[in-house]
Amino acid sequence: MSKNYTQYTVEDIAEYFQHFAEVEPGENSPLYYAISKGIVNEPELLKLAQQTRYGQPMANMILGSTHYLLLQNPDQELAKYYPSITGKIEKTDDHLVPLFKDFCLKNKDEIEQLLTTKLVQTNAINRCAYLMPMFNLIAQENDNKPLALIDIGTSASLNLYVDDYQYEYLIGDTKKSFGPVDSHIKVRSEIRQDLFPTFGEMARIERRIGIDQNPLDLTQDENALWLKSLIWADHLDRFQRMSAAVQMVQDKPKAELLKGSSIDDFKGVVKGINEDMTLVIFHTHVLYQFSEEARQDFWNWLDELGQERDFYYIGAEGFQSWRAKFDTKDVSVSKTTYKNGEKQSKLIALTNGHANWIEWQGF
Ligand SMILES: C[S@@+](CC[C@H](N)C(=O)[O-])C[C@H]1O[C@@H](n2cnc3c(N)ncnc32)[C@H](O)[C@@H]1O
Image (cartoon, rainbow, N blue to C red; front, top):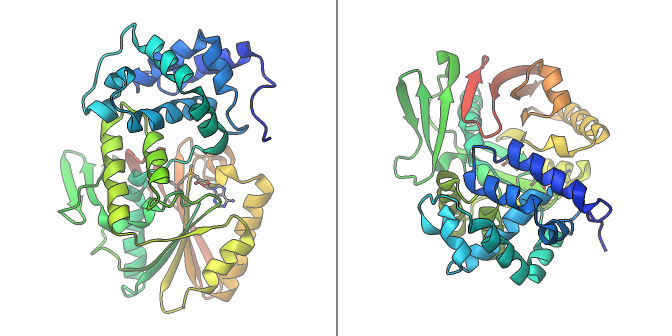
């Protein structure tokens, strides 16, 4: 049996939920704030949360698992508090936590099964707000040769559909739109400091390869539902955008989704990419899950590859040692160009976790 959180006392778990409620949903998700605060005083729910696979965040897992079951059972009374189901924001009240508790205890076996088998694996489409301009600039630099994109830690591969989204940038008082006008999926970001790259048309993308230790193939309904369940239920905009993206992939899957997690796996993927395409290897919010040693091995591999062929490497991360590297408190987006055996790295942008704002640093 895999390890869980039962080595901690129920009081420890209550303290964790108390901290989670204040720091994570806080004012930004009244529904999940109220539920997480409620769980603190419910020993049966705390014990249930302890069944979460060790290393996975308990609160996100129990909230996600309940959401997963409710989306399949929308006629439950609890569902009326879930905007993802009703389509409108509902005020929380004193009935919410007892209903949540009742639902969890009635569906204890199913929830336990989800807590022990699923992983918290978000896929944040809004991160395309900085990826798309960078891909376009790279294509331009290379006579608009088609790109081959490799997304390491791709989750459900949604950031490989970068040319299918419509972009809306707020630059000072003006809005700048880009991308297919008929797209239902909108990526929005505020541009700080008025600095914005001039890029021409959308890059042509010939190969879209996503690799993950646990790829979520959205053509399987169970994965699609789990990915949607991980969106906080009162973040209606994000939920609707995710639902539209899932539908788009289910209608017309375009990315190649591979299971893999080692340097050898990554090497195997690169081998299949011809030099007549511009290769871009990228990752967003992934390396924080690597050990320090694994990160160094990854970067060493990129340097070795740079001796063999030209390619670009983009990384967007916000973990502590990455931030220290770029001397910032924010998520940093960097670009490294490997050309003719030479390596040139540059800090391109600062942003936040969901790219709600971007501060370009240069291109
Ligand atoms: C926080 S998610 C980010 C997903 C996506 N890149 C995004 O920005 O939306 C991190 C992803 O990295 C994957 N991951 C972690 N370590 C990995 C490894 N060694 N190899 C491949 N994927 C890995 C996880 O499975 C997860 O899907």
